[in-house]
Length: 83
Image 1 (tube, rainbow, N blue to C red):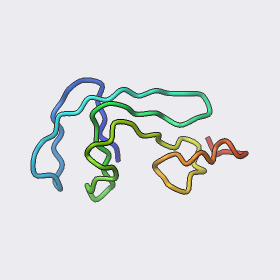
Image 2: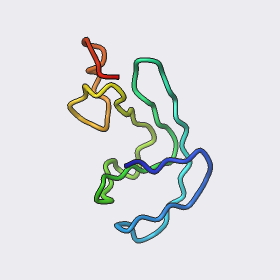
Image 3: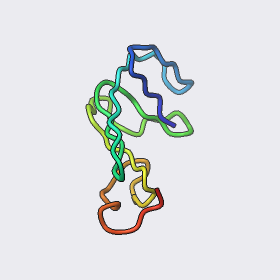
């Protein structure tokens, strides 16, 4: 589950002790991944962080072919995709 916002906001998670301010920009593309840039965090269903705190950019899979979900590994370039 990703907690992402276009505006500065405070998000609290049960696994995180302190609220974090986040601001992210989402770049959508036809047939490619979603590029997320800015100050953000992505957590799994258990509330554990999936990316280092200092990450400024990630690419999220939208085709379903990545072996590194939720992140894009470029598999969409190799053939058929589900999305």
